[in-house]
Length: 183
Length: 115
Image 1 (cartoon, rainbow over the protein chains, first blue to last red):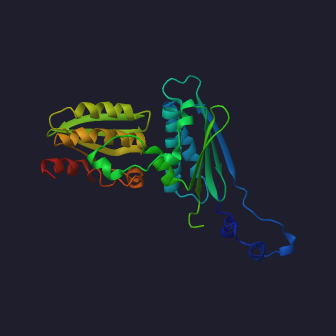
Image 2 (image 1 turned 90 degrees about the horizontal axis):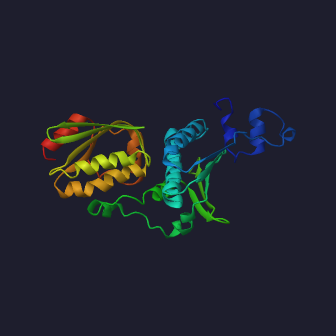
Image 3 (image 1 turned 135 degrees about the vertical axis):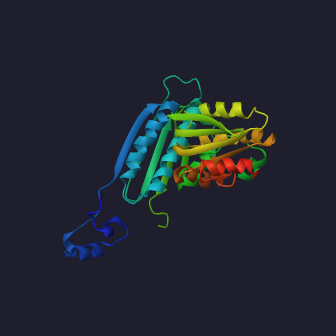
């Protein structure tokens, strides 16, 4: 969709002088060149597992048209979103939570994809991801038990994960994935 | 959202999964695997060629069932796994956890060959 843009514009580190040379215009004539392709999507939906497929499809469609995001990475990010929503539904709110909602914000910039998930689940207060040990996959061979893999997947897929407890019972999970992991 | 078609060939319970295996649909599969795991020698072949998506909730079904199945000398194996589904096994470093085969025929043969 952005094929018409010269590739050097996608690199935020390219100097203005270089950009001006490439466009064959005097450097002093331009102040700033950047790709305006930031996208911000906000979804508010009931915290129910039946919503998961709809959210996954919306997020997948959004990720699909993001420049610099290959199909596998888009799938991974959507999986991280699904895992995060599932954790909120199953753990933060629990089975008896009428009027429970999740707010998901997906921000796509030229550098990264950020997902911010906000909920009001009272059980989320007791969640301490920093204390969560990584699953012992080898031990699962001898003592298989389900569960505990969702947050591990999120940490594996995303480059930055932050969990905050706000006023009242507000919980916020912020996950970021850089479009270029080498940079 | 998840369609489970059950077939029995040569004492092997074949489950054809089609659709999405997530926190909403995984209880369906959990129930079926729970039933099968109560058989004297549960041999399960999951044909996942038409499985579009799987999350950790889906993985939980397999992990939850495999203990009791292997304890009885049975096994749970996969056939026709597509890259998008295989990806979660890679992310979780669980590629060697369950035997995988290219086709249903090869998966079935693995049970009769005692592999």
